[in-house]
View (cartoon, one colour):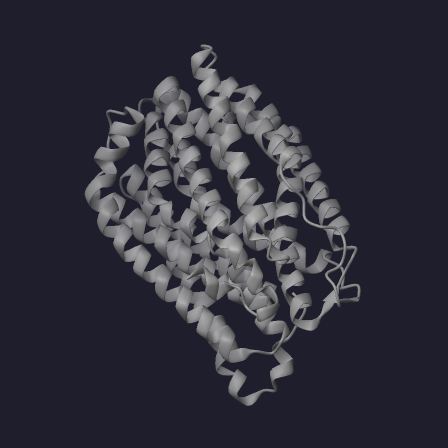
Length: 433
């Protein structure tokens, strides 16, 4: 199926990178799980709850700030491929934007030091780890956007393998040297993106042959809206353990670690979608840039169908096996009810569908529409969480309500755009993302 995401004969040669990309994502997913399992078994539920807060804060902030940067670069390179143009300043500008956003985020976390420390389980070293890691992720995501936009999926996959290997080797070293502390794992998360960026292969700096050098509009406007969307989406998908941590009494603090462990297992479809996301967005953007509406619609239907089938399968498997598997993997005594696992899996699945719809709108240049969908999803999150109930159920129903709202809004906006194609000229959709 990945070959469908390589949109034109000019990029067909890059299909050789599909398998390395899948391998890279599998390696990164497996090693992430193994690192978290090692941490959970070494630190116990309370220590793992503090580390899980760093994991959530770091991954949600980095993904919210820098995945939009990656998407913006990927989409622009895709449109350039459809038009036969090339912006030789895009890489430099993207890196500058990423480091600027990282600096602001680090400054905010330091200004709000008491609140930040509290959110990270009163572990000051975890705040330091957060501040070290963010600029590294800025550089790494900018490089990934360039690779995806150029169709160099093989090199993209290599970067993911390197990142996963660095984390796993570091975690094993901490355990073997008796340094498996919360601070030790925190510093592992801090330095792994820098090491991955330093040793990973780079994209070529020269323009592809036959391209006309043409500078694209500034990134600032589009990127600011995408960052708003990304942060809202990450807050939605990661709010559950944070809600549990904030609302739990002292005796229930370990629930945050158990809840995160279940969420890590249930989010397998999100990891799998990452295998097609770089090529998917680039292909949609290239179809948009070339005015190929039929190909755009066909690709979107294929991906939505595959995602829906995957979500249905995972819902069944997670409901049956998630509680005992999490208990065995992490050596936790507490388990979440199967009903909670089912609703949590359904919520993650709807979040993934909303992500696909958002990618299509990004490829069409409708960044503000994407932000609207995710922000309304946060409203749904707040309403669902405030509805009351048992602690973990409140967190789960908040995520489910938010995912339903985001999916509905983004689906309606995309339907509005696609239904208007029959009465508008082809060229009107070929916007620069």
